[in-house]
Length: 267
Image (cartoon, rainbow, N blue to C red; front, top):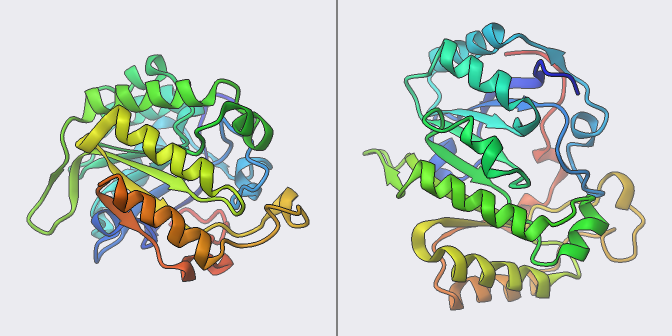
């Protein structure tokens, strides 16, 4: 990718956590490309093929204004790590009068995140793996665990304690997402335990069961199927036992209809 942001979609989105989507939607900007290469990525068309429209920081700032006028609850920047300098510039040009959410893979560095200090209100990272070998195998991401934990720590320093408005919409804080993979419940439980031991109740955890076989893994013996009810209940039970606060999904979320339509129309 170059230095200018490539954007695949700018539109209100209603598929986020309740305190993000609310009733009026989250104002999402989906960036193309990614710092990881997950073999099961459902956004393959934009994360690997890099399809999208190239915008200047000024044009990106105008996109925030459009979303703000539509009545969304927040501005939600999705997978922007590789464009962080241009994104920071856009937020200096125009900083929305809404919470700015930085929605990312978690595979980034405190140095990169320092560029966003004071510009982002809510961080929404993934914590995908508790095992570095698995992270390399499935996402081509060396040293994943220590990298992601250090990144989440920096996010907490910047965003601080969880805070909500009168409608229950998040204004400040960190929500960490974890996607359960089929046949990998032990690593999911280990990941939850790692988050609890490292960050306690300073974060919320969003436990996701929306995995749909996609791209390179459609015929994989382990990853070529959806999560079972038994697998999901096992990890949910661990979430409860660890006294971790956050969100869970219904198994109906494992549906390809929830994947955005990448029409590259910018709202």
